Image: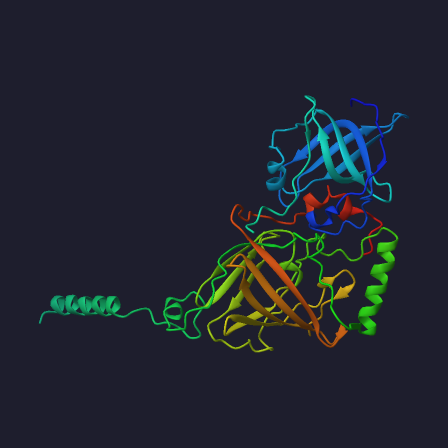
Length: 131
Length: 260
């Protein structure tokens, strides 16, 4: 397995609660914190109600953990520029997530920095509505 | 008449009778039975047909059902409520049954942050939530509620609607009482009873529902709250299912810290 250095950049950023995007409670997620992980994409699932990524992340001590990153529904990812082929297994990815409060390797997706420098997030679930 | 001729005559008569007899409509009629749809009825004051989305323009928290006015839980419900508050303070999820693939059920299914497709017929309104494709039917054909000894309890209950002027009044009962929550720590029981007063405002672009909910097993008196939805023209609902293998990749549903 390839290993990558981990870049942990923690910042206290107050963002709007993404709980409503999820199909379940996000009480276990630290939405006030954003962590950036760098690793090898093991799997990317383009599916309803959630897309997700599994990313193998290796820390400074050489230990590798599999991070599961929850994403929103494909319809809202597509509005932010995603397709089912934006990333593929084996890609080195840099992903910002709101981490789990209990330290489990995983969290809610915030954005991804692609190899070409593009940054893709996810659109709010609420679609445009007539006034 | 020869035997051969008699047989041909009987066969011809049998065929004629079979083709002349319409398929008899069996009572009670289904909501989409042609004979039911064809019954004369006053024109409905409005048509909900369209795709709707919970109005979050002023707040992202509008999907919560917060009671307005005095509100007191029963001792049994208070135990759940206090435990949910404690879990939340500890950063844990309390009985997140929706995350474990149980249906949201009424009323929460109406305010999930997913579009709802509504199709109105003279006899019924069909609501299909983009959230797990949950189906809710509001019958408008004059039928009464089902016999309580026959009806099958469900997460969305049995909804019977009637028109009162420009308002559709919907009475819903017969709910599942397990794994069914109004909000975190507030259980819905089999005594839950919901009355919705539905109106269409803002030139047909806003759907408003005034809820009055009672559940003597969970709280005292009436729980009143009003919600709004906006009509959206640029989206459809998709096939959405909660699947075990999907959940394996959702750290928020898999955390061993969650209170189940």
